[in-house]
Image (cartoon, rainbow, N blue to C red; front, side, top):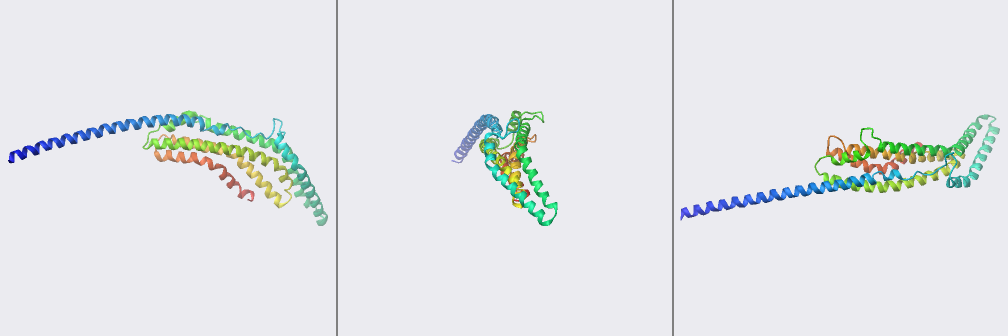
Amino acid sequence: MVPMLISLCSWWNIVCKIEKGLDDAFRFVMEGVFNIFYAVITELVTIAVKAIVKTVGTMWLSVPNPNIGDAEGHPVPVVEFMQGRIMYLAVVCATVSLIVAGMRMAWTQRGEALRPMFKSLLTFMIVTFLGVALVSVLITLTNEFSNWVIHDPGDGMTFNQRIDKAFDAKFPGKLIFVLTVGIGAILTSIIQIGLMFVRNGMLILLVGVLPLAAAATDTELGKAWFRKICGWIAAFLAYKPVAALIFSASLRMMGADDGNWATAATGVAMMLMSVIALPALIKFVAPATGG
């Protein structure tokens, strides 16, 4: 009886070992299949996301610039219409400023009261005759600078090559990273396109009312208004190059040579931060303009 039990135990051990071996082999095969499947899916998603980012990533840069003035610096019909309707009010403000300055001079018997008035009139004339041309030049310069920042191969790599480098890096959780960047790039591009159209409209509106604010700079309220409008114009002009700088820096971080996951994640966060550049710029200039 005892030898029979020993024999059965030996056979049972053999069966257990066979079962364990089969289980290990099955797990090894399934793990290999999963790794291959994950690698293939990651590669396909990476190729698709790279193509999407290359296509829509800088689409917001292609939004046409606002047409403020022609080649000779004359305002376009829309700006001319706005300035023409408010020019009557601007002339009234300038005339009132001149009368008030004359009354001050007569009361104080000093010519110092004429200095703010002359400064206000000079500001009004410069804005009226040169404001449109100056803003048009600045729009062109900011647009050229933005394109240069994005596409300049200063590090020996073009924009598409930087995209390839950013997505070809190897680190854990790459599939999640690629999906996050793809979704982030699409959302960022859509929001940026909308903000670019808002920027265009606001620049036209601000340039249209700028002469009226300049005519009122003889008063404290008019000075604050004029400074705030100039600050807003500066913010909307600077938005495109600032967003381009943030976007370009994010690509360089995502494609860093160290392949660090934290560095790549910081690059993704920076890319999403380019959306809030416009509100940040407006908040930045608000204190300086008395807002």
